[in-house]
Length: 495
Image 1 (cartoon, one colour):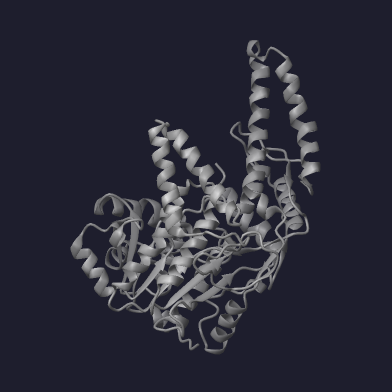
Image 2 (cartoon, helix red, strand yellow):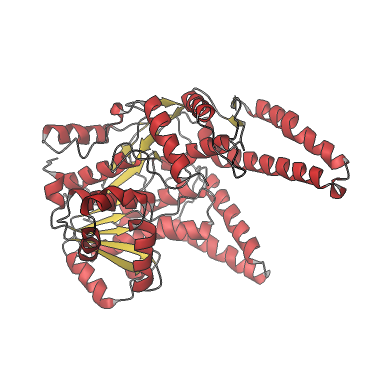
């Protein structure tokens, strides 16, 4: 593995980025424009009907974000000219041939110009419809590979997956590939073509039954969970991402392929400024629910390790991996490089600390609710078993709910309000428990020996490690959670 300057490597490169409106994609694009404005071209694939709609999405959902504040302050009016010169929004869809790009001249131009393809397009919803997740996360990965193979100057395909394709494995989880048909529970019969047929047959049955759109949606969600658990994965998201990896490894031929598997991605650690975040990720559900006064308990092992990593560190690892493996032909046709980007080995973060930091933060800095009053938070209870969880829910919510049901609440607006509030809280907590159950008592640790080697080689090669940092050992978790991550959530996520 040989490494040179990342900034120099990016100069005059033409990069295609799919999923351009996503969290990581925005950080990736902003970083390139800020550290290497002499990049040749960034083609950003956005789901849109035409070029005008794609341009609107680029400006409304990417460039206008506060993430670009540093670049905006640095360049002023010149930012618009930089964007128009270097960034080309592309209307498309990774679930279609040629990525759904209808402009044949643009397709030919991209095949001729693109050096690197970065596939960030995915649905990360644990409860996604199976037909949607299979199209985006599994077949979409194959269609991106097909497009990359047609690029005459292609140097590599960088595919972003997730560390949680490991399912509920325990112990040290190594950076190994998944092969076609491999399952986590030893079950036989995993065949991607068959999964496509299962989806098609179920959809046909539902249409014949004249099911409503809502019924079809629920049926597809249930089917995804059923198929995932049949083969050992806990949810539709990680199952379809694992199958996407299988297809890439099986079909890559001589394509240089690197797969990045981040763990739980959190707000930016340092660049372009600390604390920028979008959306609610796994641990953030607990923080947001508690801070808003909607959650007072959660089911989890207080001593379990939560593997989290800031978004800018993931992007920096992606960029250094690009330099390391561009043009690198692996020995075997199905061989690829896999990097776990996380913190559980180098700098483990314990769940009980998240509870303590959250309580301290919202006690000292309460969230101001819709009524203009601060939300007063109390003790956050971590329940360590399903039995204790059921006892807690019964005493705190279910018994009062039954009491209200014995009253003629229809005649009293006050009791109606209490009843509905209790019901919402119960539904919210139960849904969170069901979604995150596999990770609440997670016993796995993600080995990152490949990533550590990449860090070591980068340091020895004189790579700009101060600019492209991705070593979690440098994170003080208390300082980061209390002074960066939770304030970032409050500013950008709380509504």
